[in-house]
Length: 474
Image (cartoon, rainbow, N blue to C red; front, side, top):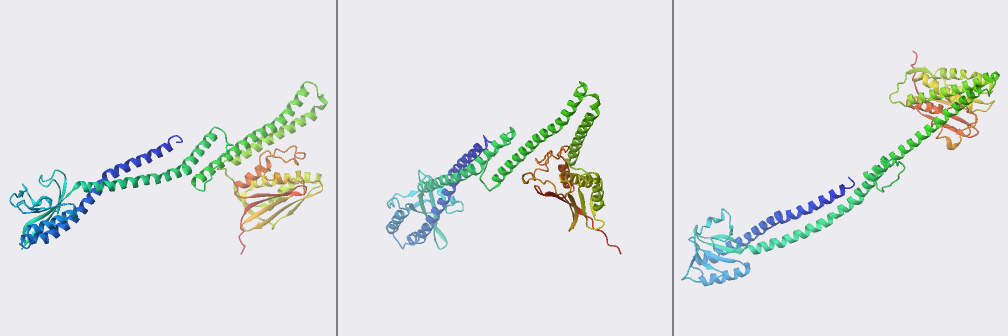
């Protein structure tokens, strides 16, 4: 397309010009010639009718002499640039404006037939072999007492008419050339607004297809071409971002798998080669067990995220009391909260607050968020869990008084394996998948989750659920 589209457009332009000249040379010329011929015939017919009703009629009624009529015909001949004849029905020329009066040697047109005009008032030809060139001949009958006494015939050379037609044809050629030159403006706009942007887009697609997803190009246009270029550039940037995320994902998975595997291998080799004495086996076996549990947790998290990202995942929607789920989830952390002197404050709306969602998935969301809140809270602090109603939604808030999240990390906490620098010292067993799982579960419910955090002060996670309206009792 890049090599042929412009050539095709140029070829179409040349074909347009060629057929334009052909049309002018054939149809326009013939139409112009026919128009001029009819126009000339109309003008001559009016003059012939005038002569037939005046001078010729006076001649046949003996009211004017031949010489007087001849003088008038000569004047008309000069004025019209045409030869004027007065002919008898038998074909005898009475008067000829191009020749002197000669009664003794009359000129007779053989095979003269006034019906040669075939229902019209003019004919084109050599007029019964009277002329060597093509001539336009106009008939006007001379009548008296409802009888045709003769005819006034005016002859005009077709060369003059053709010359006029050729002059008009030249004007048509000039107009056509001007139109073709002006139409080059279209070619210019096509080049600047379509062809050049299309070449840029084509080259960009070749770069993207070759793997250069970071290739940048710009088309300054507000039309569909500019929109196409912007969409293509945005698509490439998103694919590049996805590819970068994929590389980062693989690197993170490799790192998180390599660390525990290295520890497990090192401790087992030390036990086998005698570096670790038998009395220390139990200690290091517990370490190995913890590392295997970390690998298991990491693998399960990856599998869970993969299932959550699968389109068409079915959720088991039920109506349940979110307040009860919050109480039960908080109760599971009683032991660790006691050891860290962390209190959990529940501010729940109503005795029961029914929502429509997947019970197990929402319980998992609460567990992950509460686990994070406890993990990053200071000792001797408290965590507040609150439910509120707004329109047809239930808002669940989990707020801690911990280390907080740096401002530059707020948009990254949802990424897989991401851990802030502040959390790395506290989250030694974490996989960096918990918040990714939380977001996927909430989004699969077509709900929203937001985070508000201040570094050194604390963090609050807020998510929504669909509320179930309770029927009023009679």
